[in-house]
Every structure is written in structure tokens, then in C-alpha cells.
Image (cartoon, rainbow, N blue to C red; front, side, top):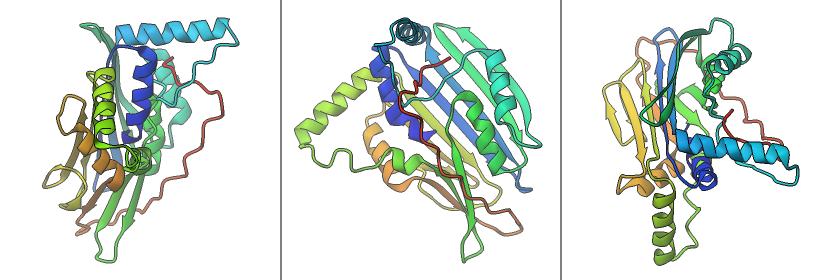
Length: 259
């Protein structure tokens, strides 16, 4: 999910107005299975604008609407079809809720998967592009990483800007992405030893990137440099190691508007 941040900026530039909120919670269980809960929301105004742009592009072949953003689907039938297409053996769709309230379109999806590999596939149902990797270090502890979080937010994007230029850019982004909030929570089956998350407790690590936070850009840059990672105790655990598959690149011209 974290790799969406710059993509979401592109979506907001296209929409011209409106907000997006994304929450993802991953729970890795002691038996190696995983539970994923994804909630995302978009204002009806932003959704309508993107739909209008998509229809305009369909009617005018010379008009191209291209983004690198997630395919946010707000249709229950399409979401269920996506789950069936992406699910692995043993995946269960625990719940799916699509609703509109107070000017926002919401989707909440909960999936149980037999392992992290299946969880990564199932999480794509809502247009997410999560990837996970789990390895065991020489100390016998486990390292859980959310792949893509580091490369997407690389901290070198603003290195050539002056302090004034950087401040102007950030002010523009704050206005353009007003209301943007991305939250990630990871629950692990052993005590957290080390993490790149700014918020943690015994077995939980959390990242919250809120455009209204004065430290939004600092937190984003830190996440871009460090990636989302949790090292937790392996005591009493025998988990299967897993390395995420390389991300397939989108074909040129593929649009990323919501369906």
C-alpha cells in the first residue's frame, strides 16, 4: 500500500479535488496463515470526475487518461469477481462491504489466507499492490517486509531542490491532496524487536501518513528510505519463509482509474 502515495498524488491531480483514504491491516498468525483487512474510500466528487474523464477518453481516442494509481473498485460484483480471479488455495473472503455515506464511497474487505503468498494475491482484490517477504535472520528471529514501500517513496526525489523550492512543492501537494490519509498496521506472532514504524507496541507496528500532519513529508521520506519492516522474535515459531515475486510492470497506456 505504501507504494501508492505518489500514485495517489497523480490521482488527485487528475481529479482536481477530492480525497482518498486507505487503511490496511495485516495479521500474521502463529501457524503462518494471514488475515488482511483493507478499507479504502474516495469522495463521490472525485469518483465522478474520474469516471467522466474515463468516458471522455473512451469517446475520444486521441485523448489519453493515464495514471499509475490503484484501480479502486466500488462495485460489489466486480470485487467478488476480482477475488475469485486472484485468490489462492484456501483463501476465504470473510466479509465484503460497499457503501456510500456522507459524500464518500467506501469499501471494506477482509480475507483469510493460508500464507503470505496467498495474502499478497488476495489483497489485490481492492486494487492494492501489496507484497510481503518473510525471512529468518541468523539470530533466529523473523524479518517481515512490505515490499515496494521503499522504492515507491525513494528519499532522493527532492535532493536537487532548494529549501524554498521544496517548501513550495510541499505546499502545493498539501493543497492538491487535502484529506489524503494512508494507514498501515502489522500484527505479528512474536514480540517486536525492531521496526521502521514510528508507532509500535508489543506485537504491533503502525505507519500513519496523514497529509494534515505537520510531519507528513518527513514520515513519507523516512518510509521511502527505510521501507516498512518489522523484526520479531522467532521463539516458539516455525514459519515458512517467503520472498515476494517481482512486480510486473504495467503495459504502456494502461489506465488506472477506478472501475
